[in-house]
Length: 167
Length: 464
Image 1: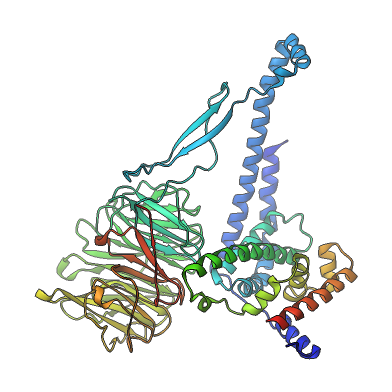
Image 2: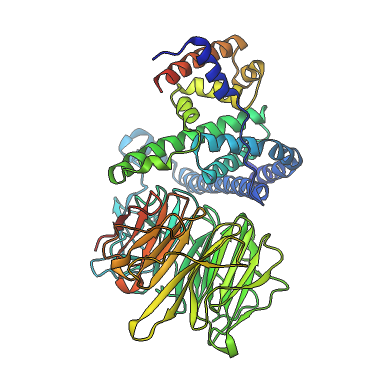
């Protein structure tokens, strides 16, 4: 293995990707971070997650075919991690503080609805509704048939409607 | 009750198809992203190099052994017992360096327990459990988000400082890294008294000596502010929106304050703010206190008890006056709740009756000030003040009978439940979450957190 050559190629890859990635950053950072804020209710966390998604995208630049889908999928995974941590924290904090509800995140309804979906449906909903990708684009990004995406969206809407009724 | 399907669909569509919010990137985000990406690439490459070296290091002796003694090789192949690895199994045993005496030492002691006969020196690798937080007394706190924050303090009385980190809004803390800095419990003391993080990874410990970390506090490197004498202390560092500001004091007596600025992408590249002369003490006298307060792009610097530098954009500064009258000084910190909303405590010596203090607020960036009315009940000398939203002011006080806070700019005051805890620092992390540190003279081994804007407080006390 020619480690030196490999390293140089990897490093150069990021440099070569700069202009395109720069444009992608300008176009997608703000909506991605805004979506992360809706999902987490915390500006700092939203910036952290959006920035981390871009860092990972740059790391896999040469292998990613749909950067927007990759960004939102990565961000969704990081948001899920945050939800899990937050839930543990909420349980711990509720034991000592009864007024935590006043700290509720902005637009919790959407976050709670999406959180209530199975993982697969979360991804489809995120890409279609929040990343604003067409059914065909989502299907290509996930490597499934468009019909599968349509069915998942239908299932997701049914579950979301049920969750809305419960709320 | 189940809603009609059409209503439900409309509600669902409204939720899912509402225009997405946009959250603009802070200054320097893109540069930070590319820097982190590059760093990870090199780390990955370094790991590959290390792996190659390990493989070669393992393969060469094996080849030599095979070529050197083919009979042994046959013996090994015919006798499975000889196939047992000669690599010793090591179980690193970590002994926290905070013994019952509470005396800290610079680094944890690691004693490898060796099973089997070692053939090569054993170097423990990987993370080492941080020392415990027994007897930890915090003197400075810095939160970069609702959940992630750091405490600077020491175990026992004085000595080497420790950094503790929380990732869950102060519920649990662990020490990270070890700084060689000596702790001082108050600005002006011989040591380091403050901690500030500019981002989730880049932070400072400051005072007589300055340290910076770019890995969340795991490692700290000493640095000097350019053109600042080695014994000139930094009295405050604050960071927001990609900019880092430092206020430094000239020695031997602190007779002038100078403001330095840098970007969090170049965390040690401080330069004096151009066109801004130093704040000097009256007649060359020593300056009591100085502090930096940030809100959005606005920068406020107080110093010498009277002077206020203000800048709406962090570029051009004007000089204003604090409301503190003759014989009074501004008590640290000045506080801002928005780009033009400020609050400050003025304290003065009331002779035999001790010190008193008055809180003032400004809604025009320090041009005009009004005292909070009515005054805080119970009198006493307030040590700390902080403001979040307009009209929300929290006051810490030395007087246990007047532990008070107001959420309407002093229109009414409520007592909070801090018992005998005297606050020397109060800071809003967001509009509901507040952290308070004890008066150093109390030597409390803990701190207070409020999750309802200062109404009720929870004491976190580190074990003795």
